[in-house]
Figure 1: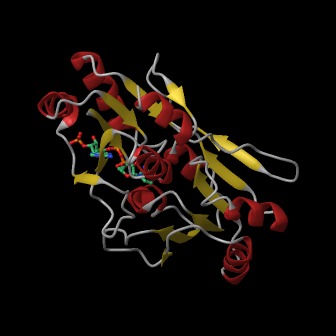
Figure 2: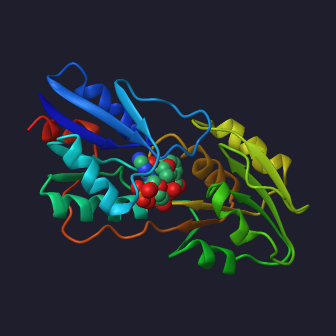
Length: 242
Ligand code: NAP
């Protein structure tokens, strides 16, 4: 039976595993193992890093993998680099599945920046920030003069959490009403987000537009050159079936 490895941790990866299950393909989904209570895909799941491109290449050979789909989050650049290198080295075909990024529309006030540090450099003083870039990015934004943060993440950030940070533990999907209420309740001035794309977390962008809140949008890291790219689980499933 054809053996496919999906590098996951996203809704698209779970959708792909579901599409392929029962279709004459043996699917293994891989998770980094960082989130304490992850949403799991159907079928076989393994957890934890492979040990860089070398480790992944060895794993692909040992498990006799026929096709590799990188369906990780658009900001999981190290995993994508490893996948590209391991695929080139082993000859296992690689497909990257990435949901499209978000686009600015009428009524939006977005500023695109190339990195988290560039986002932090844009913040005024004083300012109340809605920060949704993930718990591991928090240190980039703490310690800035005059900045108060509502930091929303799935799991708690590493302690100690400074006094100017209010942590909100939550996981999407979110509603526009809920996001609007948060922005009003905490008197937020600006939203800082990564360009993750996808429907699960767009409500904050709609609420920001409605309330006239500016958005600092961190651009995605570039993909390695020459990778084969699709945007939907259905396209990836057709490719993975061979
Ligand atoms: P990253 O910086 O690219 O990855 C760091 C290391 O974690 C990789 O080198 C790899 O370790 C391991 N890893 C990452 N994804 C893995 C996977 N699917 N299976 C096995 N090992 C994996 O990635 P990250 O930003 O820490 O994201 C980690 C995971 O969370 C990803 O699977 C991603 O899809 C998911 N996620 C990330 C974000 C985000 O904003 N970055 C948001 C939602 C979900 P080795 O080098 O040892 O193989």
